Length: 135
Image 1 (cartoon, one colour):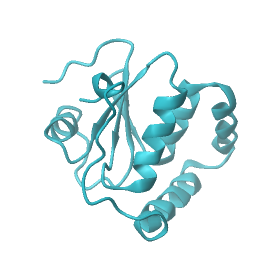
Image 2: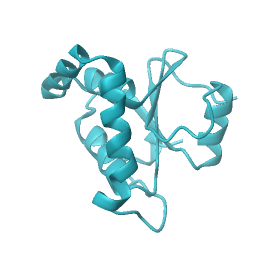
Image 3: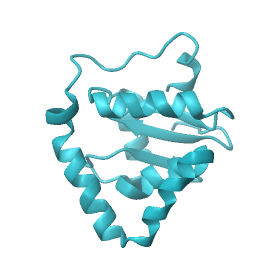
Image 4: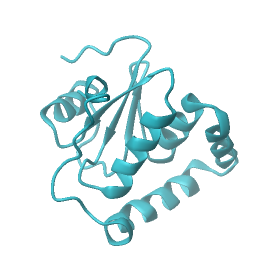
């Protein structure tokens, strides 16, 4: 069982996706309080967290694990934006849309992400400065 140090949150992401990797880089850059830890979905730790939190298999989404709960699709993205604060909180305006609509937009981007942004040949490797933030 993976112990999540309080008050940390975990972002599970597709390490082969350029868009996902860029998103992780953006979070790392703006997470001054180091609230987030990161884990590729395809890693052993990622699979263990999916089992540990009973996350349905086949979820093609960024996953936010926070306070013993998990969030997917638009709720995960908005949860990350909320925690980052600052101008990222502007994204919370999308909460006025029904979740069904937000998730539909999220799934459309997710479905096209490799076509639009490309796919990496190997999983993202963190820099030496950020290595301690990856599981």
